[in-house]
Length: 426
Image (tube, rainbow, N blue to C red; front, top):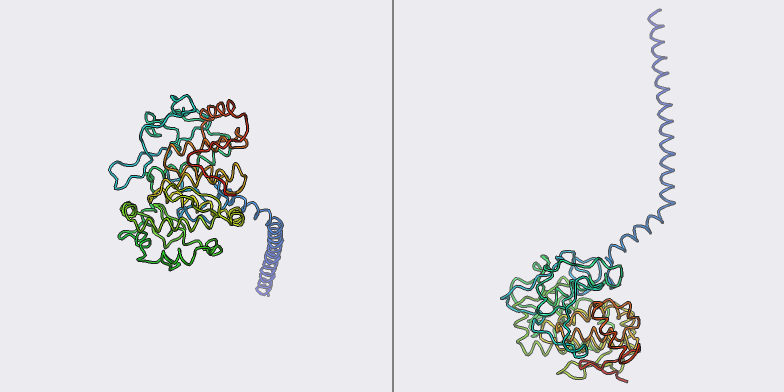
């Protein structure tokens, strides 16, 4: 009897304990459920805010403080995340191109000309402490000061002017181009063809472009005037205007040094490149006046084509690529007339508002000839509406030009009628 009582007591104790544990477990699960519901409701309430915050962070990171608003950059390396910004792989100091290379495209190092309107003796030497001194812009170096950026130790403090900071990013890209790519991204070398000359073969009509599958004659005969095709197809521009830097067409090949040399000596290839240039000029509402000088003017349908330029700003990147290609493959004298045209249209005629920043930060600095580049910058400064905000030239040079301008013309816009200038086609 005692054993039965003990057994009953144990059963009751175990049952009571299990019931208590079950009750506590249910209470804990109920609390956990309520907390999860609260968390999910909170996340749902704040999801839009978090989404906008992440989008803003991504947008800022993608722009990288750059000038160009577009994101479909045909003439930028595959690794770029912003329109015209190369990877942060360039050194702070650009070394000179190595001597003895197969082809040297480095801008002339001859004795610089003297500015006749600045008393004829003042050199374009600028101190590194100048407010708008840019260590990626060799435009203002003289023969004596061309020791390389690594020798400059008195650098100016970072400018608080946002336009200058954007220009400095652009200047790094353009300086690297003008000096024959001394800082070549490792991935560029991988994209270069190991053998053969695909770009030259394409321009000689021996192979088709990829992925479009068109011969150079097809582009000239069938694509000419097909504005919608030229606007919305993004794989042809790297074939028509190849560079020693890659674009976004994975099937296009970058130029090699040997290929550049052969191209520049081949009359057929250069003739076809000239036809490609005219094809794109027509697309932009421009026509060539003189094949010898490269002078250009508005075409008959310029209004419609200018509207397209303002609406589709990725064409700014295409124009930069075209200018670079002209300077690389034997037409450097075509660069300045085209840049002057865009400066005149944007600064004097006030057309092409969305091309203006690219013309100032990129187009001008694609010009290899240093004398012409200085003349273009001077033309831009003298015709810039708010000269206090002009950041594409050191303050020292601006002060000289401003003094000259006030002595001769007051504060009015002035067309200096440069020898490389273009006149408006009425």
